[in-house]
Amino acid sequence: MTTRLERGVTYGILTLFAVIALTPVIGILSTAFGSQDSLDTGFSLPEDGPHWSNFTDAWSRGHFGTYLGNSLLVTAVVVAVTTVLAVLAAYAFGVMRFPGSTVLFHLFVIGLTLPQEALVVPLYFDLRWAGLTDTYWALILPQTAQSLAFGVFWMRTYFRSSARAVIEAARIDGADTWTTLWRVLVPMGRPAISTMVVITFMWTWNEFLMALVMVSDEAHRTVPLGLAFFQGQHSSDAALLAAASVLIALPVVVVYVALQRRFIEGMLGGAVKE
Image 1 (spheres, one colour):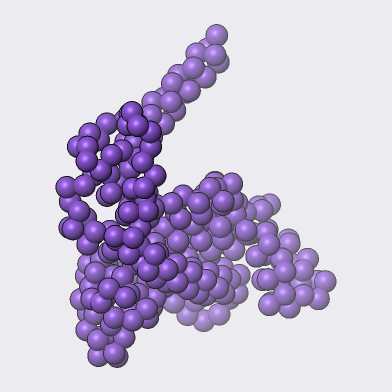
Image 2 (image 1 turned 90 degrees about the horizontal axis):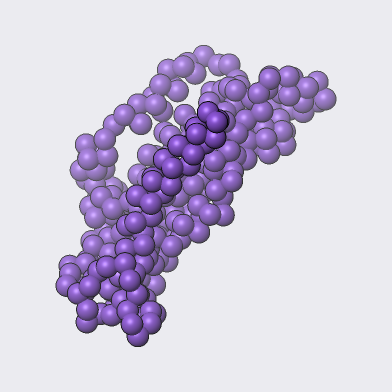
């Protein structure tokens, strides 16, 4: 009886939190499919059926095709570069032993403690001096540096918790450092790498402040910045705003659904331990 009661309480709490989490999502979806002439933002679909035209109207009016392309380019480059550099640096910090490794690692960790608001203005002047503002590099370079701090910290934890016996066995078999990393540890660490990829993707995709400061021309706007300007132009049209929000959030949802199993494994450990 106690076990059944505990299970019932657990499911009740999970159901409650699921309802709390899903309520805003359902509200946004119902509004996105509603009529543009209606001010109703409730949870029911309109009587004349869902208005799919809201998404096409938001797409064309807000120029989200260009913004999505910019965000995909910036996010893909940031995630790819961060993943490669984080794996290489974390392997050096987690497995190798060399003078100054502790000090260098602490420098990376400092990057996690510095607020973005304190760095964005000096970064703007540095990038403007280099002639990189209003370019993709003004978005890629700072966000790669910010994500790299987390990536190195996250992957170093995985490498330090990896089974030493596996590394020693690979070296006994004649595998060099490069082979041990890419043929042994990286395949074992796919859950941890997937977690880092998902988190970096979400951070980069949703980045607003950096794009607002570094980009002033419409050709290089990303989707969060484009949504802000779209909201200013259509502040009274809840259906169009909700449809635009759904379009912007959809890539993040797709990436998370595709990698959710490895993401959860990585969050819970994801490493082979002795």
